[in-house]
Length: 444
Image (cartoon, rainbow, N blue to C red; front, side, top):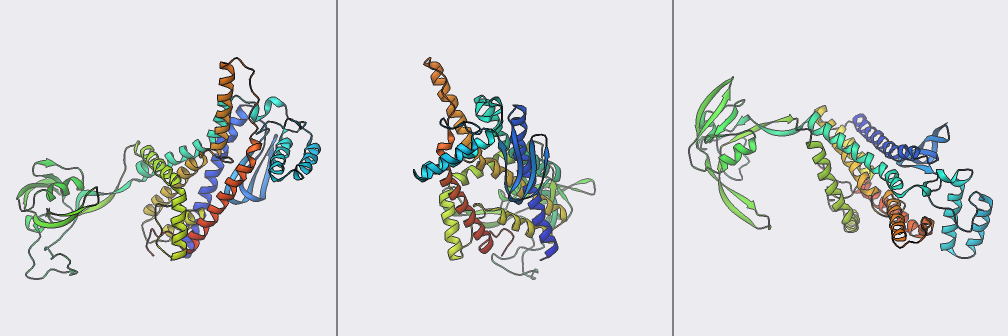
């Protein structure tokens, strides 16, 4: 393995992840500032701060580990009813008192104390919790939407810019003979029957134009016609050196095993010609990128829905050394390792760029879907709280009652802590699996 190329691949993915996180947080930052919310910090990464600078009222910085990011908005939660908004010392005193009342009260009070710090010296009109529900939803949706937009752009570059490898109607090679089923021979014997395409005069470089009177645009269409005519002579038109050449092809009968949708198998007799197609990168229509992103979103949603079972399978495979599901969950360590392996292969540079682009696009889809899970501290949890507030206000208005106060989500901190612990556990499991039992996409 080319160690330098491997390292470059990992670094490219780390930078790509950092950019994805940065854009995610910009998706929160821009609407927050547009709606007048005071933003104290915009940070990329977690852990110790490596660099920061202040622009106006906001500190912008980069932290050591590119595994997340955040913006600090004033008043994410309403102030505690029994706390002065700016009374940090009072909040600290109440926190000490809460510790004497139990762990639940302690967690809630600590969260309220931290929230009180963001409210200190800030006009109440510039706090997040005072915004209309739709503005709160827009701010929290901004991050995931940025990841989705980036994924769509990357898939569009992949499908419509770089192009996807497809079998074309240009003939790459023609077999000279038909080898017996299961044969490992690399050369034809004297008694091996001549391959139909070779007997018909088809040559490497010919482009298949028509088969059995039907124009073909893909190799799959040509293969389907050949398979449908075992033992039957069919007219073929190929393009050779700019001219159309008519030929006659008689596919031989070939028995293949076919698996039905219900899992049952059967043996069918199909036609075989003995040709292989050339593979080229074909740029697809501009809508192919968004369609790929949508398909990827659906796939990731399925993974998230089945996450407990998939994590169990990952843990089982880690302990037993079993082969992991390539479509299962993976940590940033696994994605980085795959990027390094791709960069270190002997494939053409364009092929490596295409795979890296696909990995980064899929990573952004995962960020989009996962952040919308309706649990705090994820963006989806904050959206759910905002929608709950909106529903309460709508009911109050319908019943002619005063508008209720914003929901104090700090009281959900114990549940949030459980979610955080589960996320840390999931991350630890996937990290271990990606190090000791990684997904094998490029061979063991």
